[in-house]
Amino acid sequence: MSLIEGDPAAIAGWWPRNRLWLAGALVMVAASLGYSWHNAGQIDALKNRVTPIDVAKGQEIAYEGARWRVLDARLIDKPGARLRLHPDAALLAVDFEVAPESGTTPQRLDQCVGRVSDDQGRRWDAYGRLPAGVLDGAANTCGGGETSAVDRVRFQHTYEVPRGRPLATFHPEIYFLAAEESAAGSYLRFKL
Image 1: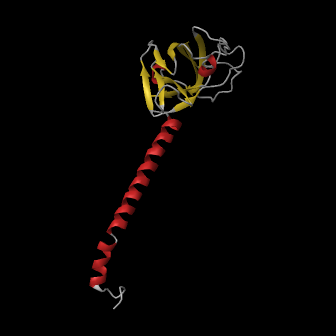
Image 2: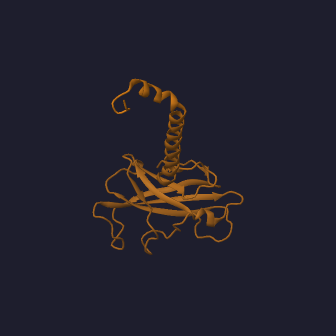
Image 3: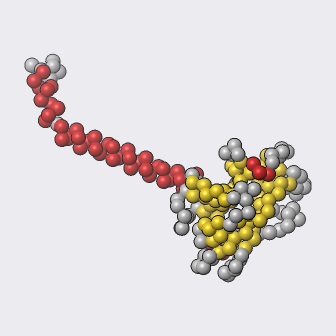
């Protein structure tokens, strides 16, 4: 009689003969899935910035070798014909101040990225440099375009956001693509 026909003695003996192989395969599958899940979580944290560091209005906070704060924020409903905004969009201008700590260069600060989120979880990236005459002409990079060490740098990020929303519903954010001092996936989220 063959195994296909169902010899009960042969079938019952298969499990004890292969128990170590089966246990090893089960451990390998579990370790492989666990490692893949952990690795995917770390990649997701770098891409999506999953850990906010909330900063109260007017507060200064240390992050990535510098102290950061929002100086001013304003919504501009009609910034003029020089900008081609969506008809239902406004311009949000946020003035930041950053004080580099010892050893932090303006070039390191220039690696920061700005975006804004709202209470509904939507996000918008910061604009690049605005045309001359649209706003006051502050630098739009976190290092302020400086080439040597400075005490404080003022810079401005601008965002195209939906018109008609209160200023307090927006939260400017700062993060670094390559974090050196903060936890992977962390970012600053300021209250206005």
